[in-house]
Image (cartoon, rainbow, N blue to C red):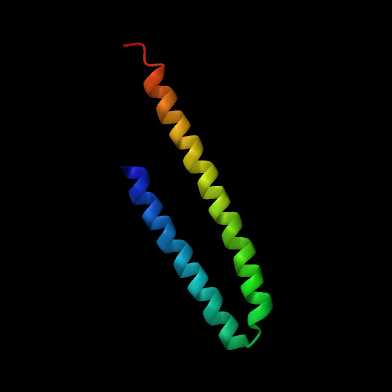
Length: 69
């Protein structure tokens, strides 16, 4: 349950980051390079979150499986 809630918060953070990137790109008038760099960094962040989430899932499942009681 807590992972779903934290995921939602993370999504909001990612969206706000993307929004700020876009605003900055509009101000500077150099959309192309900023959008590309934003996409690259966001995909990296997304990948990182996925890895963390998968590791968290595996850890919780293994903790349940290998409980002594």
